[in-house]
Figure: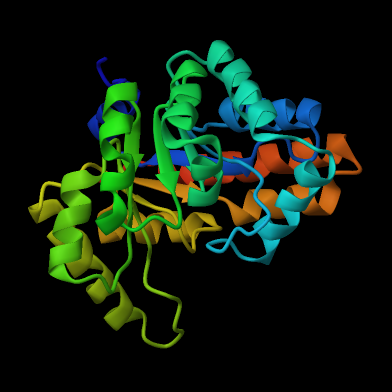
Length: 277
């Protein structure tokens, strides 16, 4: 089975305009299935180029308190993995060309069985799967099955990774590579951005797929910083999820605020950033 071209098409389109791809993240089923679909519709109509969606998990070790809080709601509603994948299937039917990535944890995959899980992902139209707690050196656990299912595996590139690890990530990640920015240390911005750029250049030298920065981006200025560092796209998660946390009891306000926020990030991403790579 051929792997979907949705990511490639998205990156070619944004790159032709010197734009960044904007991929917002939310947990599916949060705060409830009906509102979850309305939220995702709002992301798309407000300028998302793709989606990164998470399944609620009881121990999301890679996520901070904002997203942890969000995962509790679907779990409390007995919103299952099956429900989450079915909801993604509904999103796929609405948006046939949109790249859709799934961010999940190894326990969820193993509990279902790798083949069963990845086949379900394929059947609902998911393009990529990022297993947040699976380092690239463990990728062989999933690689063959993912290939057979036509699912692209995405790996996280931390800024302090060795050259050997960066090379493995570049060679194994598909669709895009999820890059972490330098951890924020105020007062050393120059050193931080230099280190970050070196690490991105190394990934490019190793022929990585497009680089998407998925940490520490919450406002338009961060998008310009990411463009200057040379990434191809950005993910924002906590800022959107925080609006859900604050306003889920008042859906109209919640959807308005999410729309305003996503438009502000999409506008920054879809500025002509010139060729920085």
